[in-house]
Length: 442
Image (cartoon, rainbow, N blue to C red; front, side, top):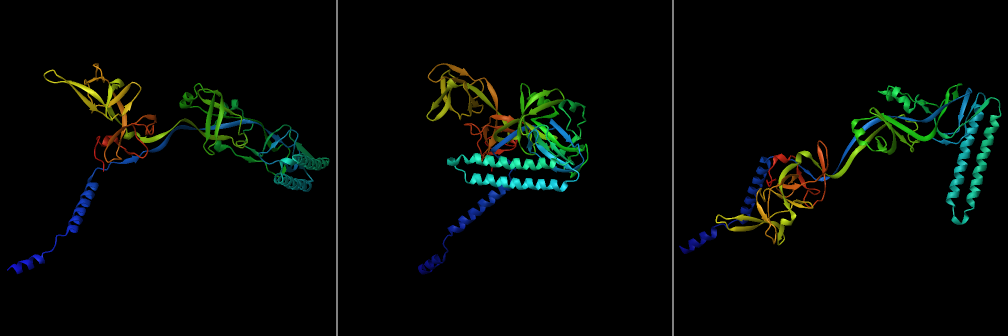
């Protein structure tokens, strides 16, 4: 009998601990999955650096000191300056010839050959430059002067032929071979122009004809570095330029920042004057730009995330410490009139030069607190509403104060890395009204 019992005991299977652990893990995963899909969907956004730009776009008309030069002779044109080049007074601009087109083309070719030689001379000088041979600079200058003088003699020589007219500049400036028909318009004339849709009605004319008639445009010359932009004024802009003498605009196409002087404005228009970059806009009549009224950087958050909490204002001299914890000495009286003093710890959210701001969940209105090491007391009464957001990076809705730098209708930019506020990469709940403080956020 004993032998049979021992055999039965030996036949019993040992308890499988691994199977039990496996089952527990499966149950845990199932519970987590069910909880995950049955929970409320609370959208969050990561706190990242951002910028809010308040700006307004405008389109203005460019005016400048410019003149269109007309041809006084009919014939084939040979031009010696490229579009955008600057010319000196009395420089040879072009030749107009009825019968010597081939000879004029030879001069142009000669000019290109000479230009190549000049470039080679400059390159050779740059490659062999040495501070110990500075006198070679004067040799280079003499060489360039002689070659330019030689070329000028060739042009003068053809000018002696009776059917060739040499066109010289009557003043210095920038040369352009483009017209738009508004070259004679000044700032004062703009009031009399219908500017609505004007940019679409303007047609650019290229002055690159080989044969020209008498009285046809030969080139346009811009005589000054000064130019103006006239554009409509808005109430926002009028408020912005108050007490300003200059204004910076940003070209929306090139992103170039231009600072001009405010030379005139009324309730309909404003005129800016610039003394630089006339080369960049010499063939442009209209300028599309924006004016940035405000540009701030910080942590950008949606306004829907912001909630308000009540804080009580506590004079800083009533705050004490116990170990590493800040707190208040709260005074209360028992039924028998005995005084009781209790240390109430708090987490410091915010303070300024004179006050600590303590949450209404820590202290309450009419609470009596005592100054440390003194008998003087203070009854809590003044409360303020401070703004903040809920951060869920630790798995629950943790209220954190914010300090706004700037705000518009949709977003706010707040200071970063404050001791009491949000930090980069916090998980901000987008709609602060959806949760309660300390709510578990999975």
